[in-house]
Image (cartoon, rainbow, N blue to C red; front, top):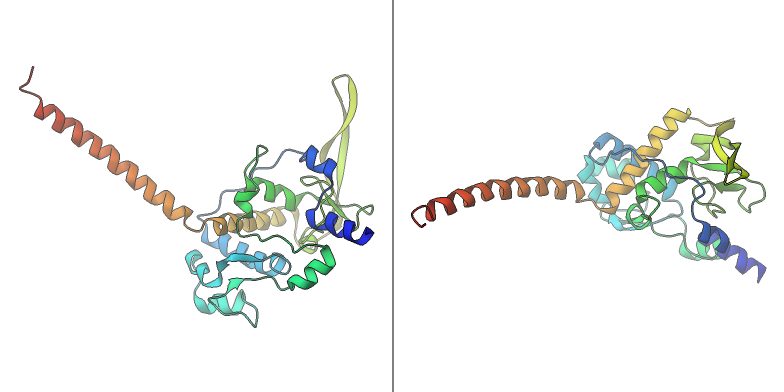
Length: 251
């Protein structure tokens, strides 16, 4: 029974108290890069290398990456695994049976996560951007990690090698007559392979890719929408003048 409960805690990533409390910090705004092909390509590389090991993107096919400027050869050589074909969907390396045995539940699919995680606290892109940048070591947790955007998270930091390890820095402030601790910033306790600026840049690219993957047609939709509005504006002027000409002799 204890193992089952632990597996459920790991799979859902939070306790009932944390679910009720929500994020303990405001979300940072993610950079807007869904039109930046270089950023999307880098984000796709990060997604395949660091997310696709456990999480699937079952509603996205590898060949759809052509839309972000990659050709089939680049996709096959750099972003697919040996058993994948260019027309396959993005499936996790871990088998569902192993995932269920280890975590109690298969890790969630990430195809639509940038949209599904939107809430009153902010859009899903801001949530993911903040989540991936606010991991810290917590030896009281089964995985050794905790997160400020998702308290008591069950997923360990997938980018710890890039980011290194950090610890939150608090300061005491008075609120409603009581002294409380609030997050002031972070201190690096173990360096990663990237500087903080480089890490933030790469996380922004990864978030941009997740945004694009959640709705690959969004950029085309926006472009078409602009032209539709321009057409409607022009048509309104034409209709207004025709109406004036049609009724000019009627008083």
